[in-house]
Image: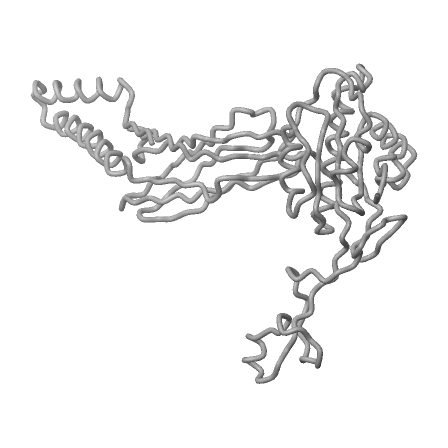
Length: 362
């Protein structure tokens, strides 16, 4: 933390002149006025000195995640450890990428002695990426504003802006196998999601018994779990620059990334494992694993296109590395074009009618 207590040169000059005039002035009334001015300056200095290093600020979170176009709330906890009131506190959160975020990152408030206060402001992200806010700069001082306290608190904040959300559905419905999926166990009970309990019946497995509820009610009770649909997702994203038309390249590549992110969010919604690969800068093959869709969304926040063309069939390349029943989604220039055609025709958009669902099952 960097702290400084400063004032303008005018205050120092005024104090010096008043002191000299007081020493040589023969008039008592004028001496009284000069002494009063010196007293005010001295009191203001000690007031600011009592506040110096007594105001502490902390972020309530170290990381914020939101989608492009969404609004997030940034909050601080501020405490005045002094007995004096900080009548005017000015807080400024340093966000270097000002073109990315809308709304104010400046807060003006007051802090009573020993007061703890929560302050917030909102940001609206306009461009995906990973950004860092901080340090937080605080300015306050004495009530007359003669002496200023400047503080700089590191308080770094990581802001992850994921791709924008778009209206897109997949063909899957939780608990209902569709199409020609070949899945060994399409519907099963997910033991991580307990639905309810019921009275014990002969034949119930011992591991399903809810011992806490049984002890509470004096009878055996069995856990019941939610049904889940076992059909992993796999997303392949092609953002090779030369595969896209030059005049709309950047916009269409961003749309391809948004489509991929929407599919990953569907995997989260359906509680499915999700894998990922891309023809882009530096992203290898990721097998479908639990909770991997969140990682994929973070990858899509910073993914960048690559020069050249995608010269292989991604399904043929990856199919033998995927579990049976995997839904294989490919997103590239053709799928983006179909998306815009369906959007222009005001038609329902899903991964099948834009051609993103290439294969399902082995």
